Image (tube, rainbow, N blue to C red; front, side):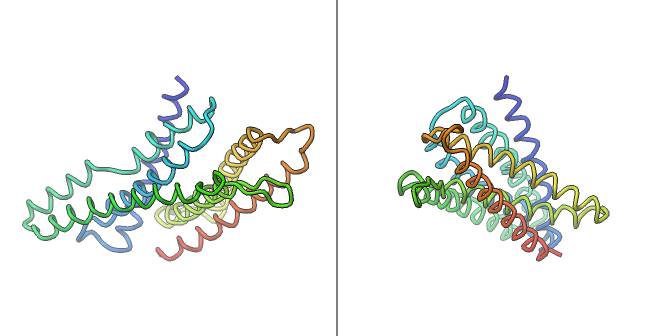
Length: 237
């Protein structure tokens, strides 16, 4: 039951992201070609490849058993869309745009396969050296997880910036949306960060100070990533 609920939540988030990304791309590039569908498929395929490799390398636990299908099946399953790709291709053929239709097929299939492979390769490289963690001055620093959290926070900033440009909301509501999303992601990613450290031998009783510092490092990483994502999202204006 927990897995089904997690997949449902992931799927709803993926569907919203798909709408935001595709419409943002269409606003910037127009609708003469299915740029929006191509964009969500490329992003989704890359992240699917990256996080599939990363999540498979994580130690099994009750938490991982729940969030793996939520992310891979729910979130990215809803984000990517082969049915929309097929429908748009048929529409191009019916309108007589045969070259555009063939280009859509070739570009979509080949590029999605390529970015999925790049994502898998990135995950393997990221966690190749000592499973994505190094020791600095006696501290264990999971740089692999930090990098993944940076990507997630960056996408939150990027997609939120694109979304608020499409709907008429006040500055106060924009700030509230950003604070809530950033707070939720930072909290949950930080908790997972702490859980990972606990599985690697850290204890609250003996190393609480180190855990708090590493939690703050993760928080600052996420905040910086959100800020970078907001700046990138302004380019769609």
